[in-house]
Amino acid sequence: MRSYKEAFSAYWHPVAFAHELKERPLAARLLETELVVWRTGTGVAATQRYCAHRGADLCGGHVTGEGLRCGFHGWTYGQDGRCVQVPSQPAVPIPARAALSSYQAVERYGLIWVCLAPQPAAPLPEWPELEDGSVATVSLPRLDWNTSAGRLIEIVLDVAHLSWVHDGTFGNPQQQEVAPYEVERKPHGVRAQISYPALAPSIGGAPPKVDRTTLTYDVFLPFAARLTFKPTVFYAHTVYAIASPWSEEKMQCFYFSSYHPRLRNHFPDMFVKSELAILEQDRLVAEAQRPLAHPLDFTSEVHVRADRLPLEYRRALIALRTGQAVEPPTPD
Image (cartoon, rainbow, N blue to C red):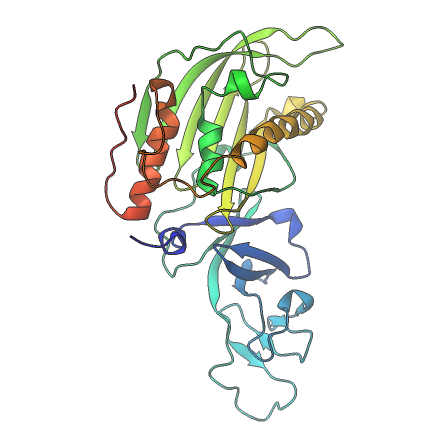
């Protein structure tokens, strides 16, 4: 079986919000690989973080017209990682070994994405609504959790936990039963739709009201989920959760929402406040689960039909890890 790093290196993962990457190079980490990302004249670049000369941190350097210049001795590297300038001896040929490991990088959806493999195994998720001008967006600060990327996506997909974990935010403690739902397998992952009697946010101090909300889950393997909320008394909005693995047991999540532009004056602040509270409830559960690493089978747990969506996601992720089809158990 392939290692965790080997299995997921060939996929695109976000390493920063685009607004975080300014004129200076930025540190990033992905699958136990220390990176530095920077803006070029044509886009973005990503290489190993430490200079090939004396191991200096290139995040302390500067971006020039020639590339990324190390702040220690001025060695400068192009987007492909090759050294193009050694100021201390400009007349001498640059050693062939004076090069950094370089990786594919692209900016899209307000994120900086990196693929560690020479050829990506799959394209980026297709979220056209984020590029056609029909919606506005708001993001949360990056979420650093001590759990695996797969664990985070599973809790996002977990229908049965809403009324328990999210009591006091949007969960409805009176709705404990999960009605039967179908899961559709898609080329990019899995998809499901449920109806849930969520508690609408309290307005003007009035008690929260039950709002039957349609939730549409759309998963893009390996670690991206789009969740659309369609209430009956409020505009629809969509949440995007992309878990980026630092290692098999730690990840950071890039979490943002799209919403109707008419709500620009009200939605962002409400979303940030409520979603941070909701995600803190999830974090406490996810970081306490064992193992922290995403399970590679189903034998250590007991499942029921209400778990079908996270089970189908896990089945697909195990298949990516092992390179073969893995059927989930028949739920009790």
